[in-house]
Length: 266
Image (tube, rainbow, N blue to C red; front, side, top):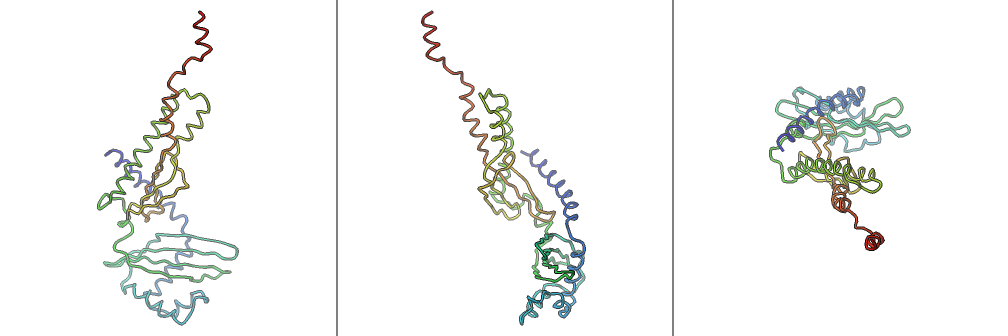
């Protein structure tokens, strides 16, 4: 078990490095700089400039109060670091949207700021802003660690190691078993697990997707370098059914009645 866990940690570390480069390729550069400049206006408490860039359809009598509440999260100190930790774009007809999330590091304080942008024609407009405090950086909050993890985390992690080994064993036995016909269908059936059960490694939350199948019955994923690790397992239905039927294929068929009669005549 120790070697498997070390291998998993090494894989996750490699995955994180590779994801960082891939993630940065999909971050829209112009909109990112626009959002950083816009969020800086909250620190400066320049509410007139903030309102000027907001979609006119969102402006009402309570807008200034809401903006002041958002600005209250920002300290006066200059941020030590600003990272883009989330980026999504959407396009439909004439509407283009970008949902960008930033992590701010201040002295003794972390913030998560989200900006929703809309582009109509050539102008960028702000369609939403949300800011919330963080207890630590997302890298630390979502890092892969065994500290303070629950039973669900360890159970699914163990099964995520055992199930692929079980499927591979069943696959090897399938190849060596004299199945009368359509062995390839059994091979395909064995390779996949059905019904996905996923644990969020950070908070231990469980999600079940009944309409899902995955190769080798297990998976490890991380939506971005700043997202939590998700470990999923699936039920190895094909491997279990094959092993239950394998004994029948290995047992020689009894001679037919015609053969018995022929032997009696002799």
